[in-house]
Image (cartoon, rainbow, N blue to C red; front, top):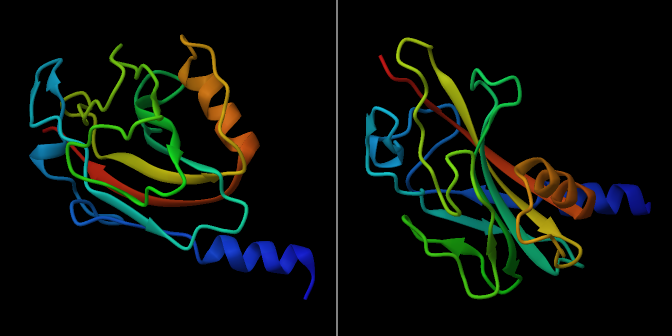
Length: 168
């Protein structure tokens, strides 16, 4: 078996699941932001992952809206250096010890829920877990773009659930 095929098989077995969100389905008000005209619960969804490939040293979890009318999308959540022994985050999660929460596009280190502009249509929210080959060294004030770059440069597998949300 070739190394390329082995890596593809390992990556294919890495799975993200959730009891709160589902692929292609609308999120509940619990995942809506509280502020900016939104009045939701601002609660991160429950997430679990399994099948991390050999060589995983840490995990990262992102929530991103590529449909935000910013020209660059919207970072709702970025947590890096989740210990390799952790395979789930509870709803409304407090990040595990040793993890780093990056400031989201609301300006807060932590989860910031969905809050698309009223009448802007359905937005996609990509919740992704990355298996990392090493813990990352990031500056204290790392931007979402720098964090995304470093995570992707050191990811050996990823899995995504793309949930939906719309404000009418």
